[in-house]
Length: 338
Image 1: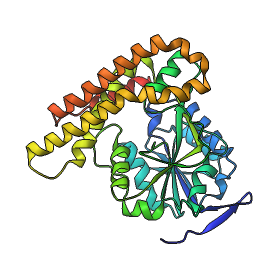
Image 2: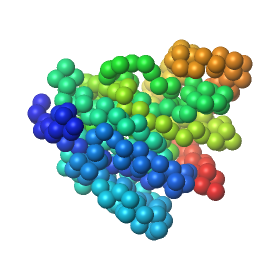
Image 3: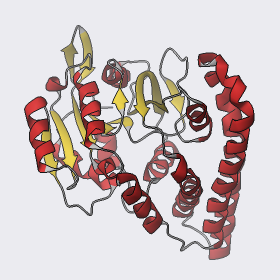
């Protein structure tokens, strides 16, 4: 494997890096969320000014006055404008060609990152015991209410763990992940799967199929905003739909009937794991928030409804493979924005 060059950051040897920040999520979050994200990046123990490139990708959703303020407040950041019709994953993968760092770091405009996030994300690349090619962090939501407890148990961002060092995991969050340049050149993030979110699931599974270990760095913590309650039913349905679409994309060989049976088997396995997921997460949430035990009855009702909608989305997509929810996703974005 090619030896990576290292640089000294506050006495620690870390690889050279480039960072890419999407702004596609500005369709659902206000500009103050973007400034909060950039402020958290500016407070990193590894200075962002030391990045080979720090790129904010503008898909037409950053107002001119906001862009001017960004340029004034964050001189280490370059704004790169792309076409407004580019998807979330295209806004991440396409600017990779503009970078030169040994490690490419991806983060989102609607998340806040703890000061040691970047150092934790980069250090496994120079750890000889790991020699990582892909490192993700832990992304969660604010757990300061009954609703926050429920989201941490039932949604795709689990509670923070108490792990002390990197550990192998089965996927990654696109708002908190990094890859070696060589890996992204060999296996870029797929952008052709026309679903609202889910290309990262397909990418992670393809990586693991080729023997790549995805490491999770528990010190690389990001906080994602809590989803609106009124949008949760549609989000759970779309989540199930996305998982089925990923299974369809991976089941490409054999006769049509055999492919359909393979997709159904994968979806059934995913749904069973989905049913068990809140109970696997519960101990971590209870350790951090013992008072959350008082909200168990309400959370169980929400978890049951969420699972029903998830399974409905997955099964309906299996029964109708051509089903597309892109318009539903777009309408949710528009309503969030207003």
